[in-house]
Length: 369
Image (cartoon, rainbow, N blue to C red):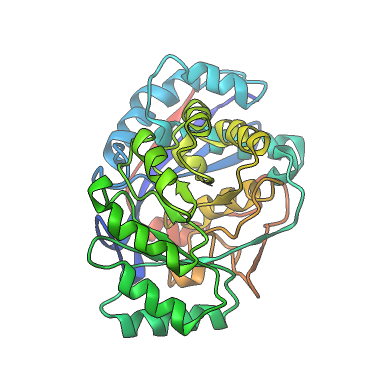
């Protein structure tokens, strides 16, 4: 598969609602979109990094520079037989898994299309629909939280995840648990706590949470291991898992009993497959995380989430929750808590180009010739 050309764009897509987490409020997404061309085919990749280094260190502008000036020039004009060969071309460059993932995932789409197969099949998936939950931001009040939880349970979502932070945790989770005693309920701290909050975190054990996601520092494993020994509730690792090597260490330390997989955070599908294999061998359940993806990133996540190790509902909820209009033609919508995987070769979605043009802030076309 010869990579003949690439097109990078920055898009700005407004959210339908205010999304608040422990590290801030989002009302729009700035999306890095890559179109990769080769042998008459097109592969699509979407960047999920943010404008500011709030989730992890990477930013949209930094990733754009690396793709435009370093990563794409490294592979344009090259004949790459498979995604592993592309990863080898990027190996000399340290870190920056999110930027690398944009290119690697676009190439996976291109490669699967060249094979004439859907991506889920190429990755080793075993199902045609994915069980999904919903991630709910911090609301203005407990009453507002109860209303939004009830709405999404009625829509069939199979897990409710609530964002928490110090001062917005036990009381709101207790109210939700009392109102919905049978709901599968989880909490996501986005690294808002430290071991000094241990007494408060231990109170959450009484609420029968399925897990508490990333309570401690974004790059920590040791303190999570210590905290897990103190809690009955499983800890789920998210931000801390940036590679299969980190996953191996987390397993050895018993730093978390559940893993959140985000292919963009791990550098793409290849590293996600390695983490999947490690987790399966250790008996650690997986679920597919979300980064407010538009249609390209959401489709990639759906295909990966068909692998057998993904046994808990993920965050790949309906696109219409987030966007008045998505960047792809296909409607990525859940029904009764299940999201069908797009059909067709590759990721199975096609850009809605007139709309993409309207929301483009910047673009550059690069050719091998």
